[in-house]
Length: 328
Image (cartoon, rainbow, N blue to C red; front, side, top):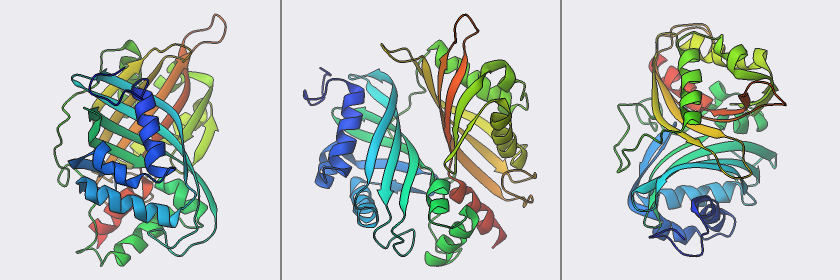
């Protein structure tokens, strides 16, 4: 039992997965009044929303567009304590049919599969701070569009460059109650060091730290394997923003029974689009990239311990929106 939390939840992962199902699949949208603080700050790459009423409205709009949406909890990597507050990094595989008109346009009837990672701070049976990344690139591609074109549509639909919803940046962010930075697990430290090496242009971190058969899951619904695919992904991102400031915001590592050692790191890039990379010709636009990476470590036989699975998300459409707004 967790102090301050409903006793029906066995532990923190059970709480996170349980309330997610209750809200979305069991249609308990009204429970957001109980589970989300009235003044919660929810940051996604596309916007910053404050207050549970805004979250309730967005939830209903999403369920209108995707009425059969299922949220499969793949993992909850967490830190903290019930008394001081806990931070969960919750990785979800979402399946849904685009059956209603909404933010993604007229209903297409297409079946979608995409990931979300949500970092949530909870205390006293209530979430009061959140960072959420949805794989928008995977969603729009499965609907037959490209992220750049969708970002342009969004700007136009929201009233043009002057009136549209502004993406998350350090300038639009709002402070919330959570001030933690994670825990001191060696697995979190190992993943954060790998990311720091890669972002510091030391791509040799990939062949030395990743298993040759590492399973990789990247934005756009990409699933790939091995060193070359990891190098291509990280090189494409860093090359687009070669001088952007890389910041580690939150680092968790865990060892749990019947689970591989694993880690969750929330990070960002903040700087100009100065290079050829994942976002085409350099534009000089100031861009903020919010990312979350989950990783699992292990060894085969007597080989070295290596990164065997990686899940990294950022929102391609939010990056394109910032580039297009800078050009407007």
